[in-house]
Length: 330
Image (cartoon, rainbow, N blue to C red; front, side, top):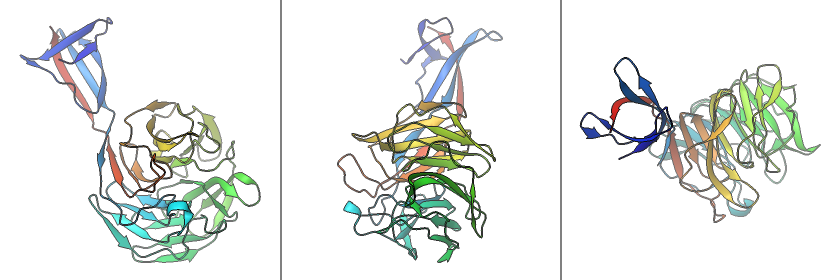
């Protein structure tokens, strides 16, 4: 029988009718007393579960990504030791990956935003930092306006191919950069810098409500964008770099995997707009993976595992809704 603490702090077992109630997988909740019917109620909020997705055709790490959980895309990336550097592009349909047209500029550590049918790739590394940007129209990649600052290892913010941020990264001019550039569908413009310059960090959200977190050297710094400025907010519980991010805006996000200086991590943290909470871990530690989707329905794929080998696996994260169960104390 599952056991919980009631509102008085006493550990209790509970039943739903004559049957023992089994605590549902992927939920955390609280016990309340319902004075209208004289019963206790368990109100559970889904915390999420990871499940296996399809394997990529080509294993890789440090690739660009776009799309949703069931319609994701990966482009570019590196093989073991950084050679070869790929321009390869694959798309996910919720069960398997299919190869699509390659990028014009191969390389790893690029940024990516947009959907599976309308994506933007920007920056990256291929023997040197580059400023190249390309858009995907569902059938081919087209080179568009370059970034003002060549960089790699930057964070990506945005959900479309016509509105995106390239945040920080490693630049030739300053090493670790704080520079942020905004894409408006035709050109890049520098806007307000982040407070803490860094590389190899996570980003999520919109160009009107974005979030960046973690980074190199291993840190937990989190900054929120309100449409005009960046504000430092609550740090990650586990400082790390080379992590991934998924989220709809600056009030809801996931910080997935990464590297803490000694190991590749399976840790997954959830952001609620003011603080981070550790939630359900990946099945295995991974750094430099790609992510798509939002905080309640995310996809993580590729990367480097704890054995320092590149991988082609993908995992789907789903958060169930709420559940309420009435019970009597036994």
